[in-house]
Each structure stands twice: as structure tokens, then as C-alpha cells.
Length: 188
Image (cartoon, rainbow, N blue to C red; front, side, top):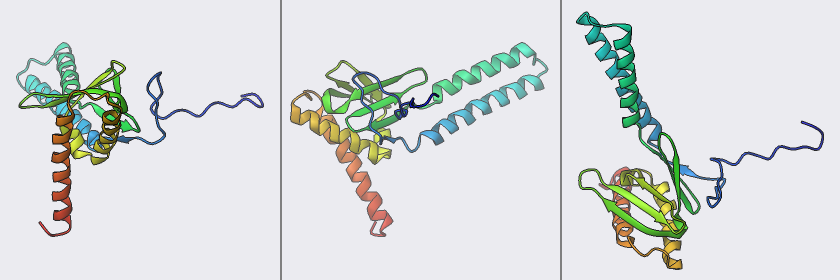
């Protein structure tokens, strides 16, 4: 670089129009372990199917490639989405793309599904994310970021649908946190 020319410092996590990124963000603490587990499951699948195929005498290079391809698909299916949150935003990064919402401009929060529940957050800018509420239960810091933004949305009057969903989720998280504190202190 030439004299007097400075490269701007990189912004953590990138920045797009309408999606400011704070210097401090929180992410899912379990994500690395869950992604590692998905990789182990996929690798185990590939190894076992290849060994079974080899043991039956039918293994060829093409079939080994097929097992590897199916193992990659298994990994893509099992790999969890990565959830991060900062001041006024929440992002969910899937395998191919990242989606963000402004938590301080939420319009609706919906919960659907009976066996595997999903939480859908929509903001006033037309963006939406879908995530597993158990990620928020397991990560109180992520929940705190979402809750703080949702409170600002309520104050501004943008959150029209789903406040009760957030209240139920908050009670579930607060109850679990209280149980953990009692257990850690020996009062359980």
C-alpha cells in the first residue's frame, strides 16, 4: 500500500444496506458441536455403507463416489443453521445464504409445528427468518438480544402479531434459567 493510504477495518460479519452490524454479537454456543455431530453422522454413514458394499463384493469406484455424494447430502440435511444476534438484529445462516431481520422493527412473530416447532420472525422491511426456538432456550444471550429488540418493536408499535408467542417463550426460558441457577446453587 502506498503512503497515506489506509485500508478500512473489516466489519465483523459483513454489512449490507439496512442491516447494521454491531462490533459485538452473540451466537449459538452449541452450533459447533451440533455441526461436528452432523459431520460425524455423515462420515459414519459413508464408512459403513462403503464397508458393507465392499464386504458384499459390489464396491466400485462409481458406487464409492455415490456413497460419498449421499454422505454429503446427509451432512447438508443434518447441519444446523447458525444463529447470531446483535443490537437490533438477528441472523440465521443456512447452508447457502444468510437471512436477517431487524428485531427492533418486528412486525410479526409466528410459531408453528407440533413436533418440531419453528419460530418465524418478520420485520417492517419485508425480511423474515425461521429458527428453532430451542436455540434461544439454550442460548440466553441470543434470547436477550431478541427480547430487547422485540421490546423496542412493541414500544414503537410495529409488533402487531405474536407478542404472546414471545411472552410464552420468555417464560419458558426464564423458568429454565431459574431451574439451572437453583440446581447450581444446590437448592434444587
